[in-house]
Image 1 (cartoon, rainbow, N blue to C red):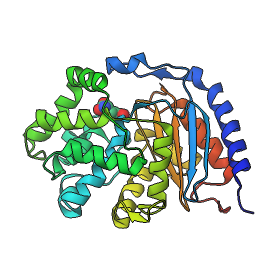
Image 2 (image 1 turned 120 degrees about the vertical axis):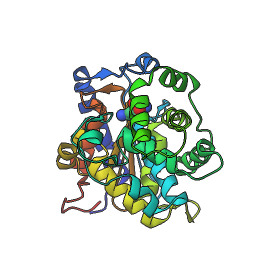
Image 3 (image 1 turned 90 degrees about the vertical axis):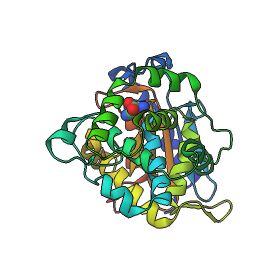
Image 4 (image 1 turned 45 degrees about the horizontal axis):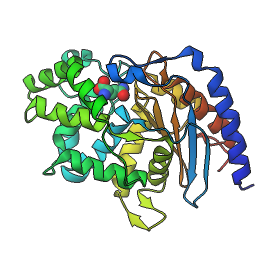
Amino acid sequence: MAIDKAMIQAALEEAWDEGRNVLYEGKVADYIPELAKADSSNLGVCLMRKDGTVCTVGDYNIPFTMQSISKTMALILALQTAGYDKVFSKIGMEPTGDRFDSILQLELKDWRPFNPMINAGAIVTTSCIETPDPFQSFLDLARSLCGNPKIRLNECVYRSEKRTGTRNRSIAFLLKSDHVLDGEPEEILDVYFRMCSVMVTAKDLAHYGMILSNHGVDPATGKQLVDSRIVRIVVTLMMLCGMYDESGEYAVKVGLPSKSGVGGGIVALARQGVGIGTFGPKLNKKGNSVGGEKIMQVVSEKLGLHVFDTKTF
Ligand code: GLN
């Protein structure tokens, strides 16, 4: 049976209610001082389908910073400009089981960061972007993938992280000392901090997920925004490493390639041109949105979206 808009809307509403019930378990990120100002009661979801169906509940239109969700777009840009061989000679493809900002494995195991979805990997990814103005290229890409030409930088969050980002500096200088990072660490970090501070809404993220699910093609224009081979790489890494050291449990419970950020966003995609974006700034200990994860889980269950589910959307 085809799933109609009313069924999707009902699933989102139920999921949003359940998401609200777990908000007490989370805490807004404060290690980047400006993020601590977020309204902890915010919770929103948007599901978008390539046929133009859009369903929303709650705070789906409130802008927040992408944070680690930007890692997926940085990877697209690095693969587009530097190519597969260069990028994956410097970054691995394996999940870590460690925190997103961990330094541990760089010293213990391999001089290459484990994957592009953790901070060390994303800093190297950033260094691989071969365009004259990497941040502007990133912004152009984000605008096209989110279907929103108004997407812009949040200056306050950017400056706040640049001022306080000592851990990312440690990672970048360690990578430099091991000759994994080409270029000036401070310059690369500046682009990295800016990318993390680009503002989106849950609706923008749903559009992004829908494009990824549609193999990189914008259904509104028929334009191939991202090569489908690049989409396949990014989506696979989202499934394996997109929720940091909670990726395994999340894959069992939700079963959708996803990426979260400490700003409270999650982008997910299901098969057949379905994208979902959630926003809820209260995070669990792994740095993932508690309300967003719950919403993803309930929506996936209600609509049978898990990649290994037998039902089809
Ligand atoms: N800007 C954040 C950082 O580098 C992004 C981390 C995240 O969203 N997990 O610490």
